Length: 195
Image 1: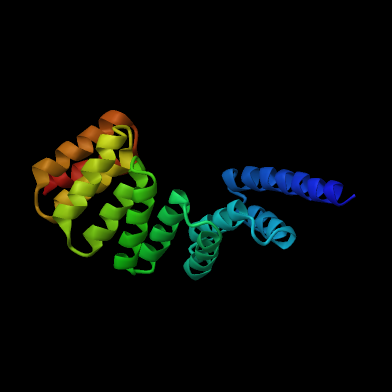
Image 2: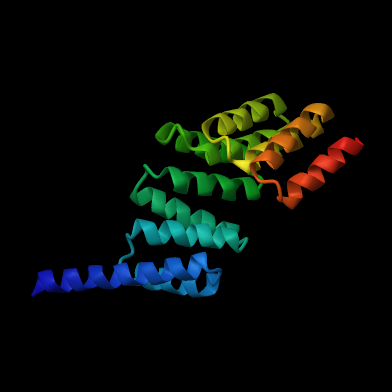
């Protein structure tokens, strides 16, 4: 009887998580949040639900809640590169850039091909006016994933900040080449050309 109860709970959690992901991906953040909370009421140690709840809270700019959820998830399971990257994003949003860099580096240590973690680390480094280090992070992200448009854009932004406008234009143009209709890249490129 106990095995059936555990199996039923697992099946129920699986169904709830499927529903939550559909809601989350579909933009119904409030609905997804309710479902993640329901999963955590059944199984407070559910790492996936806790991590996704933290990611969702960050999307809603509830950064303190997101930090708490992601930290709790990482206490349960430390080796989560995507949760570490998300926690880095939250810490960056809270202007705790040094802590953010540490989380990105932990994510990279676990998943050396994590292009987003390199690019996000670049953002935190740039916020600390460490432009050369930021550019190196963006370059690594691009080397890992040459289709990662945001890395080109962020690289271009960093180059603009250090008045390397011609290089910034080239970075934006490479991003435009990856996805020609990306409005932000086109705007940044035209701004760099005017400078």
